[in-house]
Image (tube, rainbow, N blue to C red; front, side):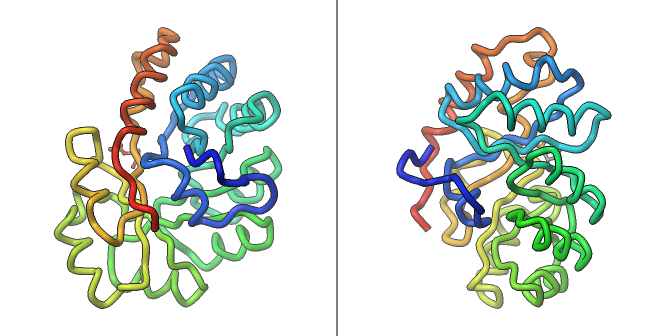
Length: 220
Ligand code: 3PG
């Protein structure tokens, strides 16, 4: 983590992206696991945590992390509507990651003071996000939608856009993504394997976070 970065107050999407080489994509089924998992990631050097709104317990998990893990910065993932954005702001999320982009989600995040990393997979989606002032974007699903070749192609027409590729990224290919000049960080679920979370193997989660922090992130 970038220990020099002040993460109190309103965050920008670039601050969220620059804190560590990887944003973990987290699925939680049990609120009791939320705080322990967040502490394990923070112990490994990762504090920007994307808790996906994919389970009925997700908002309660966001609330628990926001309340009990002051060193973590909790965000919400899989935000697909303005109502989702409002609910996760109420729960204490500081940033939002979405699998796609709509003007309504953009507006709701602006209204709630939440940093937003919206998902894009085409040039038109990038242009729509940029029309609303967003130039730090999640490339999703990164591997399936063209991987590093797509990011290289976009660096021409969209040279002012910074990406967080997510979807199909792992320790095996993260360095290739991070080497690109338009990539600030990557996202992925590999830091929080479902089996490790289910059996409460927090040491494994910390070890995976530490390993991810050794990936080189350019200072952009
Ligand atoms: C997701 O939406 O689940 C994320 O993109 C994570 O994808 P991954 O499991 O391939 O890392």
